[in-house]
Image 1 (cartoon, chains in turn red, purple):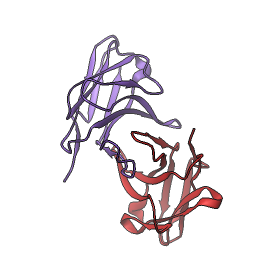
Image 2 (cartoon, rainbow over the protein chains, first blue to last red):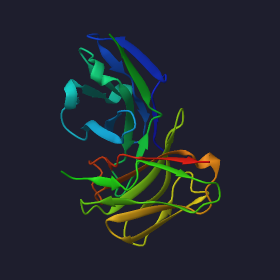
Image 3 (cartoon, chains in turn orange, brown):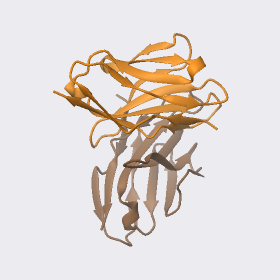
Length: 114
Length: 114
């Protein structure tokens, strides 16, 4: 079975500071990996995904994530936080089998201080 | 722009009422999902469907049922609403077999049962 761990429930950074949101997964085979963002009272929006190929993946709004198989990690980063980045972020994994489902982490709330 | 549309953003219902949450997607996706989202618990899968008239239980199906009579529409039914079903409900869809795709989410329905 696959699972996703997002340590902590809340991260606070200053505007302009580095954003680092951690995600570790457990899976018997290399999965597909996703980060979603949820702004207040909205649904989830895909930020970026890793399927195959380059392990450093760039997404929307200046975010990127790196797949590290040896560490079973897919941490999300952004060099300089903006106030508009305040939201909840979810990491998710999916097996490569047909009709496999996404497994989500519990999410982490990012606050950005002026 | 592809879309998953949930019919209501906010809904207030009384205990014991039968409640219908509607979800429509315009992407010709085979797979559709219903989640509920609660603080500290992340997203929990209620039911999903891989095809018309097919349904499978997720992790927390108790107190819920679903209907999928047409490919584009997936309805979540609360047979007799209770206060512990107050939550944010999210619908999502994805193409069949496309495990390198993530899910496309609707904007959510915030249901309050009083």
